[in-house]
Image (tube, rainbow, N blue to C red; front, top):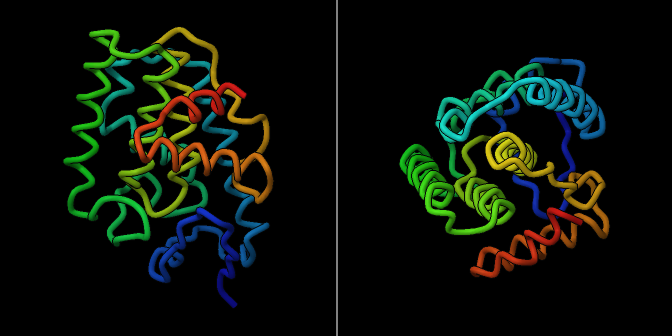
Length: 198
């Protein structure tokens, strides 16, 4: 039968060859996929909660990929691997490594020189990593969790609330989040920082 996914506004479609990486063949609907991915993400959150990470550890390509694999590795074979196809968002697939290194270097600079507040550093990092779109799927959820890890473990601030609701489902919170992302796309980061703390 195969995997039948109905996408909501702002979600990046998974290519047919990427669907072949599904590790649980009994999953056939978006609801089932969301449930299994959420269980995997919750295990990844537990993994981050009971470890300490420095900014020098977090701000590496290895950690970026490792966290994605922790979040989705029980569901997708390609979890933690850079995408091999171009999407409706993100840099060209051949530029992912370069753009990610630029972001990691920029974030190190922001922390070292206190360029922005702690919250803004983490939110700017989250926004830029979504724009790069490193992985075939899960980039938004990954970007929010890595921002939480960065703000809590490296910047000594509480994790973000991100509207206190799942942003994967349609609704007011998702609309507000997408609106804040679009404003950040044009350089206005304050609404996204405010949403992260809402």
